[in-house]
Image (cartoon, rainbow, N blue to C red; front, side, top):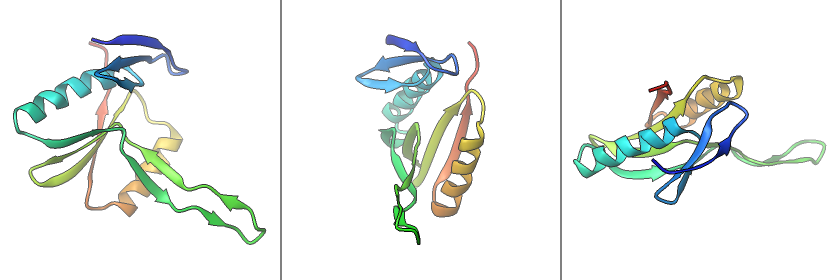
Length: 120
């Protein structure tokens, strides 16, 4: 499939395919599926690791500066003229659940799909 890069704290093995680093073999597999869908014309504009700002940077009343909150998805593409964002998940962390809620509120025009990573 690609070059193995080591394991993460969630026991996922990072993989590099076509020069893109994926956090898991499941994510790399999904990339292969999306490439085929794009080649067949079912989707277009496939982007790896698109960034979405969930909250702008700001300065609080005490003068402390806070960096923006950013969500980096696994993939984005257009399907039937509509924007789609995908994330491959083995399981959902509390941080992910919060980012999903913020994303859905800020980007309601995007479909957000979670692809469940499984063995096999």
